[in-house]
Length: 540
Image 1 (spheres, rainbow, N blue to C red):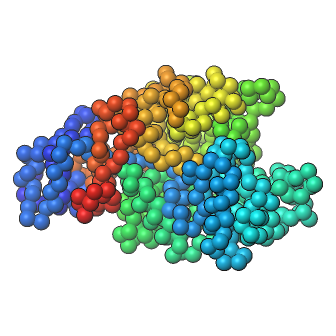
Image 2: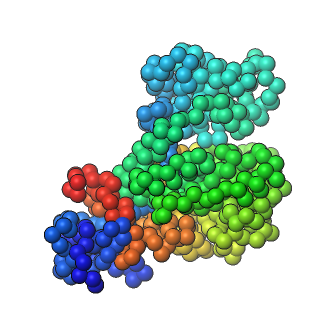
Image 3: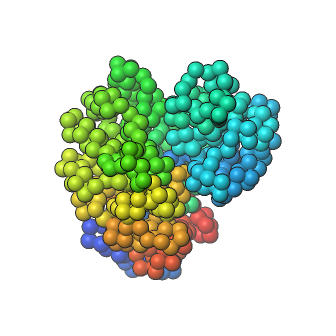
């Protein structure tokens, strides 16, 4: 051990290293951006010098920085510019928030919302109508994204050329009984309106990305896989990293055209991937692959399934992409060494993805099944044999297990998000976990609770046999997340030489009872040796 003093010494605590031996230490020393040493408080005391910042943990627990392996994290930084719907449960409250944002904007300015799901969230179980948005926003254009659909006002439809004279069919925009557009956009219709919404300036967007990182840091999250990122956002992240402003390490799943499924012809798709110079800024940003989509979702009742939906003998969900074109897109992407991450929720969509991956030579990094919520045991084994990874999200069961059972039947709901099956088939390095924020909440400790108890918000249990252990759950949120992006030698555990991404917690997530685990909160978050969150300002 070098005699050079450490920059930071956390001592007198319980350091859960998550190394292969399962070591629990008392202290960790940091020099620069990396972990210098891990061991007993007595041994590491020798690394303290006149300039070393020494923190007495007083028995508190330190874990590696958490990794959300599928998250649209950039939405966490838009509170200043958009309508937030977190906690809204009635249409009246949603419309009040829209009106409040509209009143703060100039005449004709767009009112934009954060992604939400009013059908599941509101007591009315529906999205706001075009007329309601017209009144709330005083005639301004309104664009409220809802995942794979959106609600918009009359002014927004007009600016996109989707008024009553539009010839677009019902696969683009739903119609009222009168034949006029209802303001509910479907799939491609969302893109038609989104393209006329004025983009944020570079300054605004960079500030949003920084605000989002701060929110993630407050939850102990130091790394994230950006689930569907535009080239512009990735380029702005690279600029932030170059100037030393990043506090979250981002592995981006890129949408080269800004669309989940690109509408360009295959030659242009090939040219885009060939010409894209992958953004990289030391340890803060990588481009993990390209994002495509095959089907809908469980909570929307649109996941593509092998068997018919409960009570709907002729319905098996929806495939968003044409299978032949999907195969061509994957072939071209892998040919340019871009691994594909594919949104595939239902088992029929997973079959199609695995069939495609089996026929096409792999890229240097593994392909990814994103969500794979209804994956079957035979498919998990097949994915393992093909070297395909899975990014799973238990939070879909937290609030929506009843909705899922209503669509698919209780039996299929019980085997949704089968973590036990996935870990047993693919191993810890083949599965990673996350939230799909903002569709679900960011809280990683709520997620750890759900993964290990399979209980939901109301105390109900779904698929108890698919629970994993506390140790496995924490590893899935750290070590496995690092393996998911090919960075397992650089982060995910607290060992010398790895990046100094650390979280000090108010409880021990390995030993706390279930109630305490659910209430766990970070006290301090450190990313690259730098304090990025400090609830008590102990390290400020």
